[in-house]
Amino acid sequence: MFAVLAVCAGDAASRTFPFGARTRAVNDLGNQFVPFHAHLWDLLHGRADTGPLNWRSGYGTSLLPDLGTYLTSPFAPLVAVFPRERIDLAVYVVTVLKIGAAAAAMALSLLRQRRGARWGAAALGASYALCGWAVAEASYNPMWLDGLIAFPLLCLVAEWVLRGRRPVLGPVVVAVCWVANFYTAYMATLGAALVLLARGGARPRVLGRAAATVLAGIGLAAPVLVPVFLGSRHAYPGWTRDFDAAPWTDLAARVLPATYGFFTPALFLAAGALLPAAALPFHRGVPGRERLVWGGLVAGVLLSLQWEPTHLVWHVFATPNGSPYRQTFVLAGVAVMAAWTGVAAGWPGWRALLGGAGVLAAVAVAAAGSALATPPAYALFAGGVALAVGAVVLQIGRA
Image (spheres, rainbow, N blue to C red):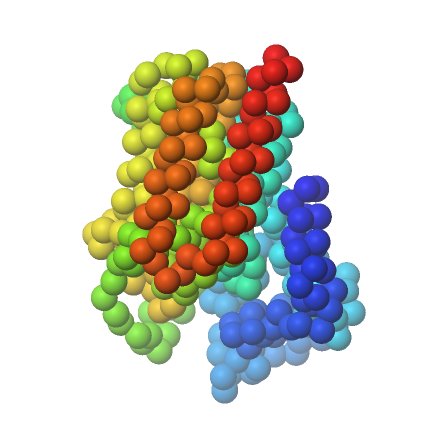
């Protein structure tokens, strides 16, 4: 609920639709995704008489590949309850609901990984759902938000696989994630596999169960995936470009709030999640192996964003036309799980707090070399970190 209210409050403050005159219908959102949902409305209300074709796309094209790429989310049919002339509002509501669902899914996944305060899991879930990638990139690519939901759900499936539980429900969840949006579900599956390994799932039997679960889920999703695959083989060739990694100073700057660069990853995460994640390597209440594993996982995923071979693996072996950091939500999710590893073990002491604050200070210093970093961004970042430190100190005092 907090994530939903935060998104609505932000849009209201900026007077963005539906709370003001500033439009959201820019680029692909206005030119493709809203019209696609309008066509879905026609299908659901029995007003589309073109069968498997959509004559509103170009000069006419097969509907099934577009349906499987953009409109098979479980949330998409909700547009049918809105008047057709308010499809833009319907897409906004679906977008906000997806962000709320991502927060809830992450909170549930965290609580299944290890015991801890429910309010802490809820706060970290909201931090994940409101990460920079979700707000700055996926909010106008609503089908990507299904990947934001899929990552914690697939990590939940990984927990079931690790414990040998839910052999039927696991493949069903995988299938739903891949049907909702196969592109980001692929990235989420890779991320969940890394989390499974971090959770101790490297045993052959566990890996076998994991592979069987994923393959069964993808098999269940095949009726949607096969038309998309066949349609893509006949699609007009897109642009081909080499991956050009962003400068590290720009990556540091994108950790700060209120920064933007189209060809850089939106790495912002609320200070309430960043601070405990940065403090984890110094948290003596967490076993050394776990600190090493989770710290290494966060660092490894971050490095994989910048190395071309791993960049290609994340993006199905093709540099995308547009933002080249579409897997950034996985990094946000892994960082939130690292933060939960520390928080669930108890509040960090002064040594860990100072260490975490030092890491964030180093990030701020590195960002000084980027033109993306601005004084307001630094002020917001410093204020957020100070509030996070104060909140932790207050909790330690109450303990």
